[in-house]
Image 1 (cartoon, rainbow, N blue to C red):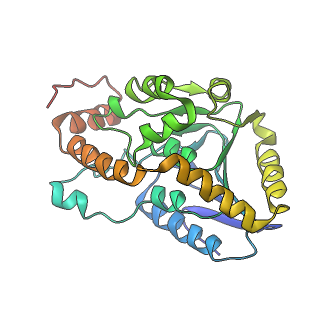
Image 2 (cartoon, rainbow, N blue to C red; image 1 turned 90 degrees about the horizontal axis):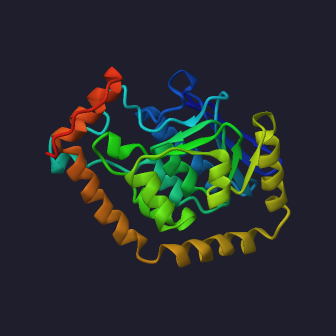
Length: 260
């Protein structure tokens, strides 16, 4: 199966999805989002796939987040336009029924970090970096990302990372529970594949039900949280500060926020 923005292959019951826009540090361009949704649907319906791995091409970035170079990113003329948008790649990963491991090579920024925490386990390379930079862009982490992050690292660390837009390196991510293991970059895919293959040797139905059990226990009330977060995100998208934050990012200067 061939895609323009991602790569997909299947090895020994393991489906491997690689975000493949190295020139943009694997940022989530619109075409990539649709392809991620499609390939997850393909793997979900393939009984030969028992576990999956999500990673990024190259050695610099897992996913650098939304494609902020495009002025249309995080932009909406009004609430109706924003609320009419369809499902995202984040939603597809969230609802994927089989175990999925994030193999994080380099930067996992913004929506890239959201992809990571929507996976079930995280293997990080030594050069991995995690960050929610949204308060520097005049928005908030989408898809209840800050709340989900707190499930991984606790309230205090989530506040530091999301509210202050602070970066966390691989070793710190491991210390606070965001990464299950840290390995050299050259051994990242081998380690993630080893974990995936270990899962494929277990009882598939038991694995599926155990994942459902853990997610349900952690996410009771999350559906309402996501809906409330969507309204907060929309409110941020419609501000002057959002426009200034994104323009400053593209011009590589410090933003001047006005609180409106």
